[in-house]
Image (cartoon, rainbow over all chains, first blue to last red; front, side, top):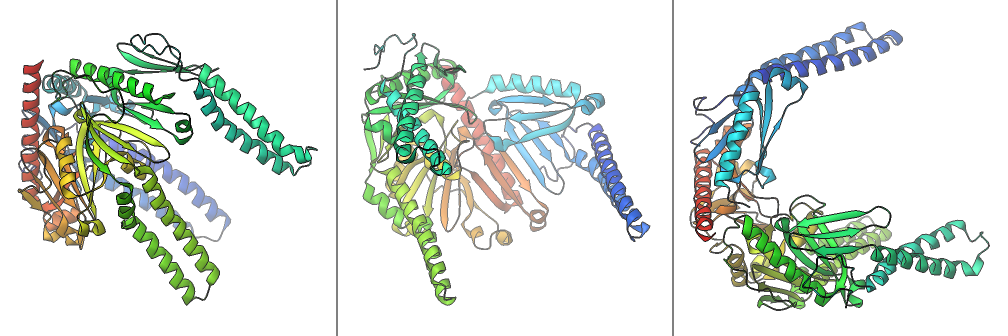
Length: 167
Length: 460
């Protein structure tokens, strides 16, 4: 792991761009739902009091801001994720503002979890969690393409068994 | 002796000691008496019981409690066979808890005060993971508890060494001593030492400062009643700190038993725990500022499977392997738990001076380093804490950097070990240094894992 914060994308396996799509989609839907609720409340206040109808634009503007931030953040965050299968360990990197690189030796992995919700299944990606005996390892790679996730788990399990050193 | 005291064949379900009914009964009785008496008072004596109310409630509670105690004893059995220990209990709702030997982490003997009066003890079986991982067998005679513990530990050791490599365990398991107090004594901490240590502890100093502060404030504001409240509160707090420490750590004895260290402690309730060598994940040495002047320190150990339960104080208590000791003794215990490890490693990486914004005073006292045996880190100036994790227990390594750290050109490195009091980390090192440390720590961790697997390959 030679200064992976700046080493560019070479050598890192990226995750599915659809993760960004999914995050944007879910984020937008939640924002729209919240917006609808807030608009309903503000409308009723405007209808019953002397409050100016211009106040209705404020939640709309906020919602637009949130969605456009999401549209900017989601692909960037997606690109920041990557992992690297080295000879003896899996290295995972993530984050732009708060960056983190974790190196997990294959032999220390206790088990590997795959998890995919309904939307992720539709879009064909899965999140892969690596568990060691320490909870601080906290390594979950979101948005790994489904086939790749299965292959990764298989490989990690095999490597873990051949290199396992126990607790 | 309990029914079925023949310990060679334990495959048949056995009962615990009959006096269990009495001890459990006393506990339930106390609860029942309190309950009945309090309803009596709520009633305001209008139930027509008058003067007979109180004894009637107390007597009823006793009968009720004893009955519950007797029933719960009657319906509890335990089995120890070749693969597992099992405890079946429950009168209406049957509960069966099984502990496979290969998952058994430790067996402790605890003598709560009431049980101890009757010469009884309970057996705690801890298995890896979760808060529900403790199984209790209560109560047995102390001798029998010791006997069963030796048996369980032998079988657990055989199960783990037979199936999973446990690193550095010897090939053959020598027979474990049956009775308590056998084995080479490593350290005995006299109660006077614990008392003096507690009197000089930062917690007590805090309580005293609060008391004095309350006194001064009340004189200033001329409010004597408030002063009394503050002082009494703080005094009670202080008394509790001293009392609990002294009671818990009375007659503290650390001794060496096959495959581990045994801790025996307590004045009213007595506890006897074992720290198995092959479950040790790391060691920490804690030196509060007052103790440091006198060269005293405390040693904590992190053991797989016991990290998650209780509050912070309880965890710290459970992890204490040496409550107060001189440096040479602490070093000896560290060396027993992590062979070859020392605190003062040569190759050190200090936190960068640019990181003073994160810790204006503390940054000077932080470093991470390593030698052939372990990764070591130190931090803290009021309470200095040195954490030691042997390379072969290092689970993973991470480097992290937030936006501010990025501007300052620093990054933090963390060595992950199972949850416990030991936390090896190098906060805010210069960025290139952080990566150097991370790479070196992973490399050594790998190398030690290779060694361990080679050793187990040749030995099994």
